[in-house]
Length: 377
Image (cartoon, rainbow, N blue to C red; front, side, top):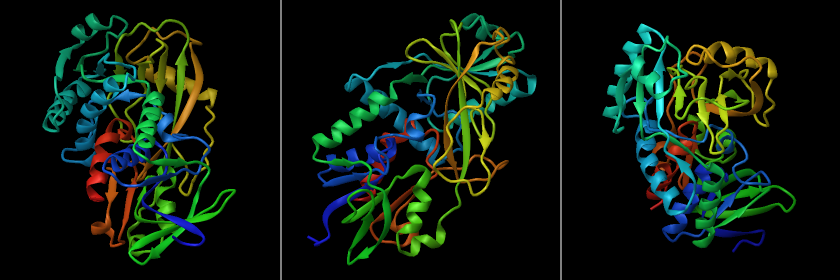
């Protein structure tokens, strides 16, 4: 025991969904686990500022970590939610094509998703899509139906993960920002700020700090610092739809390089929600971010969403909330992959960096956690 701190088996930095899932998996393997969270509550940023969608795994490059962990994570997530009594709605999804060119691209999207292991996909005509969802535009040429997609109560999921962690002997320590770190023999020693600064040493450190993951990695001494990427950030705003929304399924346009498009979801209370859009923040932008939604962005929502829902009434959109996605690519480049770097990748013993964990990180969380737990032995 150090005079100025204490020791544990594993420190997880960040109490977002990835940090909580990793900490739970590690604690269930018998490790003594402490989660350090800079904020005063869990899941304060990316984890709680999204669409709460259970993704099937439709969009990701063949063989990518996103594809692998989304499919495996979704299956594990559904079982976990049901076992823990967390509410979900397996409503399914339609990805709609509003041009002949998009309709042709749907077949490629389906084929790639199936190669990645996604089940039960079906290409349907525009008429079949309108039979399912009569409010869809007559311009919808075709659609890809994904019955295994859905929505769920993400906040109840976070609490369930935290409860499992604590039941297995782990702890979450809030308001404890990591300021720096360095090797200490065969262990890593972290200096913690906040109202009661301290030091903690551990055999393993799992850096799941989300927006700050690259910054935190740079504050820990070691050869990994030579290979750290530059993070870019994309803000996504959401608007709610007043009145009754005439859809029972998730409706998605064809994806773009930065996002999955301005899609429509129905939350567990039956409220319609549109978003996110994709607003690239300037190079060099860093947290804390401004999460306010600019009401003027609604005009872009009306124009985009009416391509598949022409009946969206004027004045129906109300600003709701925003989130920020960490990106490992620049604007205009193909969507990047997750990075999960261990000592064999970067040369710093005992350190696992999870970088650029964006969508589908929520759906993928349990599968990512299993992989991290295996890396730590």
